[in-house]
Image (cartoon, rainbow, N blue to C red; front, side):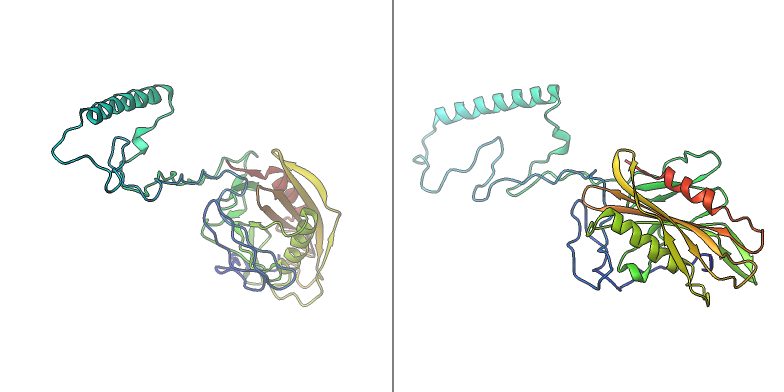
Length: 322
């Protein structure tokens, strides 16, 4: 790969649709932008594992007094100084019935008093905050895990690849305002005094603005061209893609596509060909996209270029984390 190692950007590109954002469980509204870009998806439960919205509170116009009773409307009270034994009796009965109902609710699991608080009008019971699952263990022996906690997508990568911090971001301007996470650099090696990287894995969540096949093809073509020209290659870079094919990712509909990136020979230690693949998974209201590439041919035999064997295994290992 002609990009230097650690070439992941810290700010997203601004060539396409509106900025990434949104709070769970809502997704950002689609905004118009330049052609060819995608709108960035939100970062919460793309597969539909959201928390339930908060329930509305008490009705407006009444003043809560406790024990299930409400204040008498103005002008409707009894003459002062006269005790209404009937009202007191009714209140006592209501208290007894409510106590019994709460007790039965606790017994049968329908009442959770620890989560409720007596408050004034307009109060509501809030749902607990959603916690993102941690990175899972690798499934391929001797490999490690790349994990995009925002898209909740994990994928195994070789042990000599370099998993970057979860705060790192990456962007490809030709794809619009899309921010990648779950970044993994391939093996580092020295080329002419500069450390370069022999592969890359990145992932993101985008709005489903077009078909999965179209999305997979565009991400593969634009990513391949970006990966292998940003380092200053003087020749023309071509990306040849196969036809997208249907796939299944643990029950989720998906599409995957593979291709090759071809570059002129400019240095004995830089690749002349690379393997690249893209996986698009249909989530609840979005697509989760994984792009993986690795050098497959170089004029020099060291370091080894194993893209044709490595890239398919990374895609095969991709799975949602729930």
